[in-house]
Structures are given as structure tokens and as C-alpha cells.
Amino acid sequence: CRMGEDPKTSMLNKYNQLHLCQNVFVTDGACMTSTGNQSPSLLYMAFTARAATYAAEQFKAQSI
Image (tube, rainbow, N blue to C red; front, top):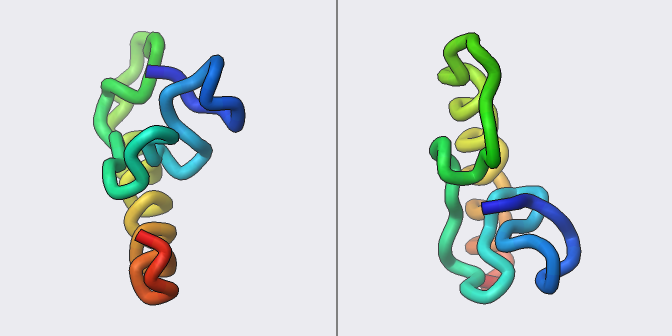
């Protein structure tokens, strides 16, 4: 997967939400095209926290 604003060139938006299916968020390693040699656990936790906060806001607004 790749993150970006254009659905033609990326699968996910900046909140790790699929462009084509608004109720699906990808917050594990699948959202990264590559990783460094360190453990990415904290990065994945940050992605998940950001996506969960955004999803809760969108759910309250009845957008998803």
C-alpha cells in the first residue's frame, strides 16, 4: 500500500483509510512500502492512534 491524497496513485489517505472503502483502515506494516532496520512497533502504534482518533471523529459526525 501507499499513502497519499490522490486515489489514482495511492491506496490510503493520511489517516491510513482506504480511498475506495471509507470504513477500512490499514494501520499495520501493510501501509509501509519499506522499513528500516529498527523495530517499527512505535511507528505502527502512532499510525493506529491517529487512525483511531480520526475514525472516532468521523463516526460521531456520521461520515463513516
